[in-house]
Length: 411
Image 1 (cartoon, rainbow, N blue to C red):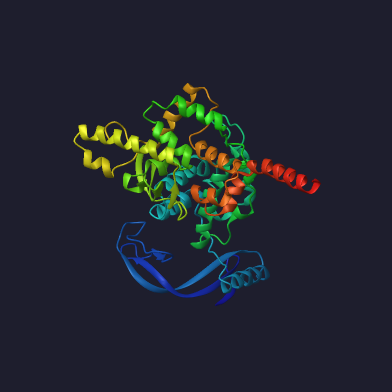
Image 2: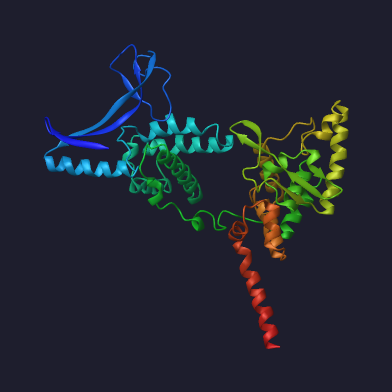
C-alpha cells in the first residue's frame, strides 16, 4: 500500500487503496458509492439505477500546516492499514448507527423479547442522551456521564436502578462491539467504562424471598383460586414464568414426576409469542414432587371437563397446562398482575412473581440440597451462577459447618 504528500491550499496526503468494488449511478453520473458490507438497491441521491464496477480507490486527507505533519499522519495511517486496524473516518452519528444500521441488522437474529428490550434502551435512553454525537467521537467518559445521569432524578423522569443501568450498558456494549466488527469503529468505547458493579446491580438487594411459613400461608390462602395450580408448580419447581406458561400436557409425565421444558411464552409489547428457551441449558428436564404431581392430575381432570363442555376435549389433551376457563393460554403480564393482587390480599410480604423462583432455590440450599442439583433444576449455565445468585444462603451453612467441625475436634 503506497502513499504520498502534496501541497495544495494546505499540505495533504494521498493513499492508494487499490481497486475495490463500487457502484456508480447511471443518472447522476458523478455519484459513486463504495461497496462496504452490502450493495445499494438504488442511488440514495436520485433513486436512479446503479451500475456495478471495480474502480481505483484513493484516500485523501488535508488541512496540515507543514509537510512534516502530513508525512507523520500518512505514516500512522499506513501502519494501521497494514495491521488491518484502520477505520475510515465517517460522519455517522450514534443515532444513525443505532436506528438505521444496528437495530435493523440484528432484528431477525435474536429473540423478539431481546430485540424489544434493546429497542427500548435505544429509544428511551441512548438516542436521547448520545444520539447527536459522532459515532467515532464517542468516548468512555461521555458514556460514564450517561450512567451517572441515569442514576439521578431528572426533571421529567425518575432515577434508574443500578441493575437497569447495567442492562442499558449491555445493550450499548453489544452495539459498539458490532460496530467494530462492521469496521465502523476501531475500538469499543464501552470496554473502558464503569457501569454499576454486579454486586450493586443485584447482590440480593432486589431479591426478596419468602420463608417456608410465608410460602405456605400464601398457598393455603389461594388454594381455592383458579391460579393455585400455577403458583404451586412455580413454587415447587423453580420454573420461570414463561417456562410454566409454555408447558403443554405432552411435556408433563405425572406418573414419572418429570417435566420437559422446551418452550416459553414471552410478552413482546402487547403481543404474546411462543419462543425457545434463551440458552441450551434452559431446555431441560426437571423433577416434580408427588404432591405437586397429584395436584396437577386433579387440575388436568378439571381442565378436561371444562374443555369437553366447550367441545374442545381433544385440544385439552395436547394444549397448554395452565389456561383460562375457555382454554386460552394466559398472558405473562396478566399472570404477574394477578399474582401481585393475590399477594396483597393474602397480606404476606410483597415479592415479585420471579421471586417464587428465588424462594424455591433459597429453601433448597437452606435444606442442604446440593447446589449442582439446584443448578440443573433452575437451568443455570454453570454452578457459579447458582452460588453467586444465592450467596446469601451460604454464610449460615458455613457457620453450621464450622460449629460441627469444632465440636468434632473439641470432643
